[in-house]
Amino acid sequence: MMTERIVNAERVEDLISVFGSFDENIHRIEDALNVSIINRGTDLKISGDEENADKAAKTLEGLLSLASKGEQIDEQRVRYLITLVREGNDAQVAQMAKDVVCITAKGKPIKAKTVGQQNYMKAIAKNTVTIGVGPAGTGKTYLAVAAAVAAFRERSVNRIILTRPAVEAGERLGFLPGDLQNKVDPYLRPLYDALYDMLGGETFQKYQERGSIEVAPLAYMRGRTLDDSFIILDEAQNTTKEQMKMFLTRLGFGSKVVITGDETQIDLPSDKVSGLKDAIRVLDGVKDIAICRLTSADVVRHALVQEIINAYEKAERKKQVQEPIKQQSTRYQRKK
Image (cartoon, rainbow, N blue to C red; front, side, top):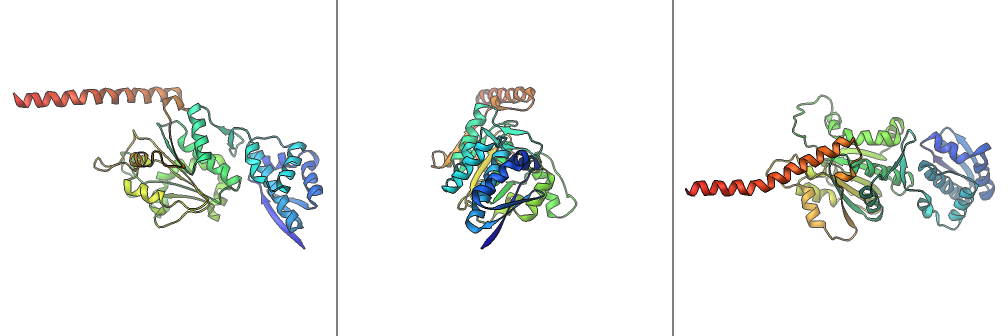
């Protein structure tokens, strides 16, 4: 009985790489698995008996995954991947790629640039929950989104969910026009920007309409169980203890969580304890949870950003030293 399978390629460049010269790679798959493969835009339509069509789909998905990470697709790669799929070892495909996390919509490879970032990416790959803490410009959010897109492309997860608390950074946005989504969008803009960069506007829109990608404020997470998802909580320093506990208990089967934040940029009222600080204290040493600390040495923005961070850290240390001396002096004057 003939069966049809559809495999979608996000980027035309990946499709061209997979096809090879004169479509030779496609012909190899057709001959080896006794299927027919037709190209329709960015979709590949596979026809054949059910078992072979499934194997061909897995082979093509694996090749597209490798192409999306900048890997060259040659005859040896195609034959090896067909063998892996036949033996049921197609999960090993991800290990064939280099240290590139993923390729952006414009073809730019995303990879860890510092030792701290490399350790961060290894922790995300290895653990179910990873907490990335560090100053601005260390790539905490951007690399986490790249890892999420890579997992989504590899079919390791079915959804990407990006969320952050809607706390104003020392400003008042007032009564914004539009519906609820319009009102929270300014808070979520950095997450949108990262996804646009990775996927391109059109692809992002398509996945969002399908429900495969969700960008929402933290309050939307309450009462849900999130299975087979890659979930990123950004700006976690602005969560309360209660919000952080609520978020962590949303974790479902087959999911991965990355929590990012900067302990020096807390915008909560002074009487509120940061959920990020509390989680680092409570979860330290818990199995399958990694806590990664990035420093000013991991800043990959303008060189001046690193200098600014160092200057603020120096000023904060000086303040902490002077504060007890000032308090002691005040007490002495009161006694007099």
